[in-house]
Image (cartoon, rainbow, N blue to C red; front, side, top):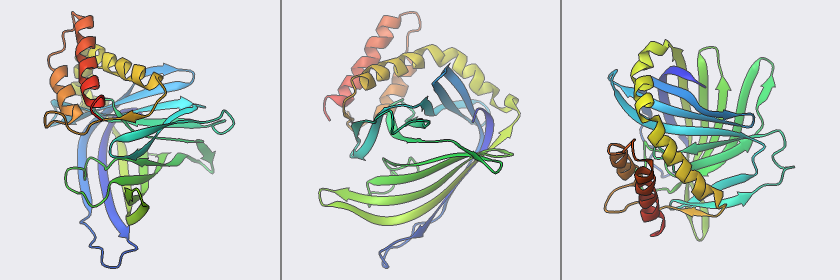
Length: 272
């Protein structure tokens, strides 16, 4: 899952129980270069950061995925940017790897636990988990509020494939109503690392500060409690304020940087 990749993102809605439902147009996007690399690795944990390269030089800090072996602590998404803390037993997660997916500002997105399968020449991992709306739709749609993700990650001869069988759900106090099903194929095709050199250079300059952001979030998750995040503060989403803050991080004053990060997190969580 690490290296420099060219990516094609394809999604299509396939079925709805409502015969009057109007299917949305297929979605396709292409990324010429995305750099995925390990920022932390121990025997039972691998942290992979993604950086998106635009026009060969512009870098966007993208999503992050943590893989943790036999992990018993998970956050399950409910709705409205609220996650419920769930404690699994050791027996439930025996032999499993948890994938924890994070937003661009290192806030939680979704988490799932399952066993990597190696059979008949195939190598894949798959699980189901609820999540907020995907980035491609959260600013465009309000007709559903939960995406039940069926995620399959498979190593391929060209790199790796993120295959999805998703269900778009309307969730309220009365329960869940299925709006539509969706198929997704995200193909990560390996390419020469030189195409991601701008991302490699950018991370060398920004690694320390974003490490401090991850550390502050780990303190939050270490409380092992439910997490709720205010969607908008001062008419801005958290990632906007965190990105603005990252541009003014003082790498020579770690205490000041930590304090600024804490203030942003507190602002979005205390109003939830």
